[in-house]
Length: 229
Image 1 (cartoon, rainbow, N blue to C red):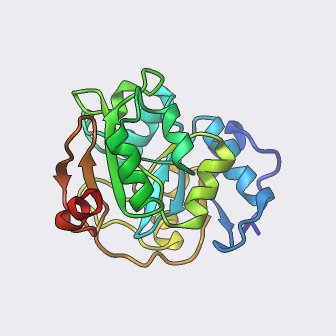
Image 2 (cartoon, one colour):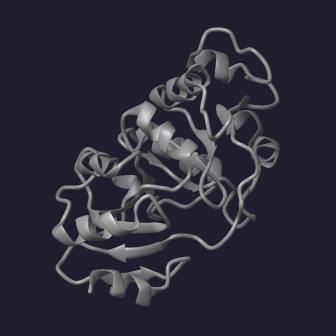
């Protein structure tokens, strides 16, 4: 349940918060729909929501909204021009953020999702350009973390998943650290317990016919290539 009541959900109530964001304690194995609805409402209002991912806590906004993207960058104190990855509830949601899901991307998704492999595709024009690379691409994955998938599913659209920390500071692995680090600048923290930590996802450019390694993470590059053999 929520640690404290905020009354009616809305931007005004979040803006009037004086110290800490609303913190929702959610069982990651059986997410409560009513509690997650509060986080979904915040996303729909252009606010920033923190949530647990496979490794650390991340920050979610609606990637279609320029105001939400600006709020995210301001919160992280991150310079503009740095792309932000997305997570989706399932493979079908990727159709909403990519111009085209290539055959190579589908093969990688079938093998590695849900899991720690991010796939780079040409981004849909519906996404805010400030979240994309200079080439207009976006990295997306379906995470193994059930609560993260459920948040994207209930929002009915992929969400951002950049690490929950100020630029240059260590990423947060628990809800208390997120709340203390951002204070009232953050709308909602979905508390799914401590994150397990570990290496980040491996990122693969799958726009063409041949995969291109962008960043090697928890999935070794040779395993990616073997999965396509």
